[in-house]
Image (cartoon, rainbow, N blue to C red):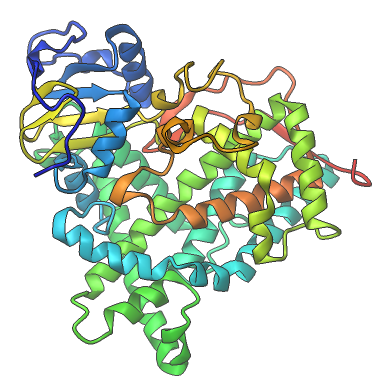
Length: 478
């Protein structure tokens, strides 16, 4: 039996929920811009309350923004709730057949495989490579600053996080940071965009006819799988030449292969390839967009940027890039700034769930297989928990922690929650601290003159439409 949700006795039916007015068959589908999907749902939540319903084509969906209900539902996965069937099918159709799209017992098995590959020891072994890639990013930005060139910060962050993720996941240095035309980067971007469009489409038209964009995505998926298969073969060759890698893997693919090759593991090369690809998808845009949103806040809040510079100076010393793995835990103020950025601009502003069976959610009887969209950002925008919630204030996260039951942090879900809490959180935070401390140590972050409007775009993650910041090299620590 699933966990008991608040108000476990139904007092109203699903159809009793308030809803925006729609039109026959289409429902509210024509009112939604897929690139601003989350914004529409948040605006409806402000109008209709913390629980409402809407109709997207033939589908009826429920929306929940109450943090207590959200936390309970996340904890009761995968038994009472699961990812939506649509999201599972879309991800599998485009080649991401790993732990992210798995459910039930299959998820439990694959979770063990992924956790074996994301241990702190693996991240510690990878740290020298992370430092090398961060130095590469610094060199690129220093050269641009010295030459008076405008840095395309958003583009470079996406390339840098992709390089980090590919090297960690598959042991390959593809260096998209310095080489724009890497086909793997284009293929990954193609898949990202197609996943986002399919998740928000009112009907699954691509299963009946395919547009040119769908055919392009299918071809990109096939190329990514072919590349990953070749990477697995290269890993096996390295491990045969150096058996010590089985005990101390230096990247995720080595850890995946070592676990798969153990007697009676139950894993296949399909699991290995699927999860390696999943790690790339899960780790690229999420991390780069988190850093981008934080830099945008720093450009608009010079006092916060100054405090980060002071902390980075103290921890990095004479080094332009952090060179001690253990020092990642010393960034108290940077941790607070990251928490605040993720509260206001989470890269996952919502999450799609689905009931496995009939459930009572907040007193509402919800039929089985009903999609429920949980509004993760709105959970962190309650003035009762976060006074003046639209203001960027890292100091909220400093000082003594409140009692567990009163801790506002328990109402935030930037990395999900419950058993399906993101296994890559430790890696993501390491990347964010490396990049942002490097920026704070070496550059002043400013806002462009007449900055372009920054809109939130849903491209599978919440991406800024532009990043109107510029970097100016600090002189003599100033």
